[in-house]
Length: 102
Image (cartoon, rainbow, N blue to C red):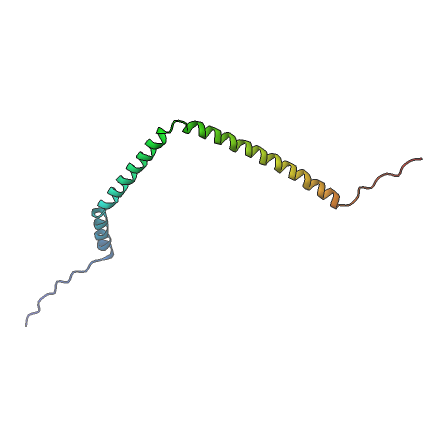
């Protein structure tokens, strides 16, 4: 009997990766629609923000409040450091005083 050659096809890793990439490329239709919806939503939010007449003034007032609070925190930090230094000096014990002359 004559042997009939078998035609086996084997897919290597590279071929499988190529197939996966092709499937990913052609299945991206939903992603672009979702992205489009998200961009449209962001545009609507920007329109709403632009419509607020005093939005800029509120931002300036908030910045000024934040800066004032930061200055206050910095000042309190300095005062705390000074108090810590005084506590260290007191914890070290009394400072010897020279005897009084008579």
